[in-house]
Length: 180
Length: 209
View 1 (cartoon, rainbow over the protein chains, first blue to last red):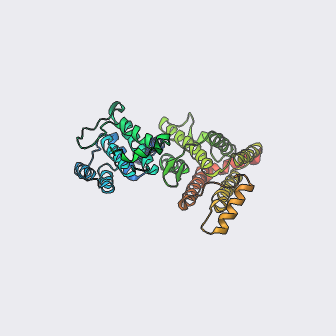
View 2 (view 1 turned 60 degrees about the horizontal axis):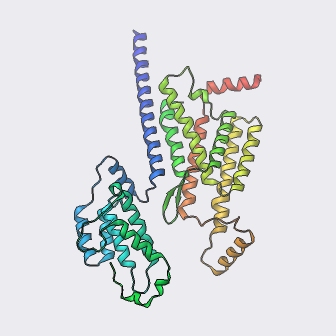
View 3 (view 1 turned 120 degrees about the vertical axis):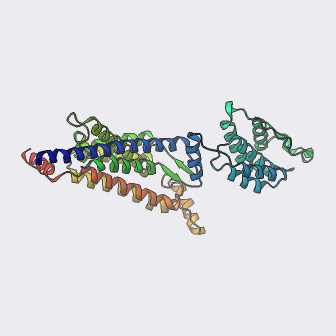
């Protein structure tokens, strides 16, 4: 009787031991995978971490209301406010269209008749590169009648062109060119 | 060692060290994978740990253990290696210092260190590297606010051809490194604990040798 009780007790301990080991193994593998993922994706904020994780399981969505507000602000040339709203709409920076608009807003903020703001143009390039990388087949065309550049590649070329110092930069007629 | 410590605590502790070891914070957050030299140093430290019986592979992986326990054991061994690698990635400021650490580890391997000596040695090596990088070089490399300190910084950088200075560290970097180092050393201490009976047997064997 005592032996039987002992066997049951030791069986229970073994079962518990096995459960702990299985749990530990699964937890370790998940944690290791998460660390590898962090090193590959290099997220900058907690929002990017959670956004990327939800995107992995296909549950990430842009905040549509914030996006529409942002586009309206962008069209009214309230660029700082538009960027804040775009950031709210796509906190994980995973939506190609939103990243395109953010890049465009940096282009418009940095554009000047006499000179461009290089820092803002650099930020614009970073965002348009992200947009191109996120777009299916790396091709992004935004159908918005109120903007001049619809293609991400066109926007990128314009930003890169703005950073270059060329002889034509010293042409006084430059002041009459139009912001796109 | 209980199943919970082997299967959960140790891998979690060492993987956290591996995560924090590569974390760099300045104007943006980056995760830096270990350079090749850190991998070499990690292998050497693993060798030192095995030789000093801090890490006894047969306790974690052997034919007498069930497959599941062997899997848990392998995660402990691998996570120890990755933690060791990232500790060197975190602490070594220059290639020259890496070479110095390499020589130190070779020297430790050449002897026949016991468990306590190895733990002390690892504590001293990593602790001194921490003080050098995050306290001494951190203070030297911070240009600061005052004009005099900035001038001295430029002079020092010029005289030493930039070999003694490093990019200024974020205020939180030292604290993170300290936490990672503490976790690593705690992990090693847990790794080396043995039941009294086993410890007694190994002491007897050592005395007999």
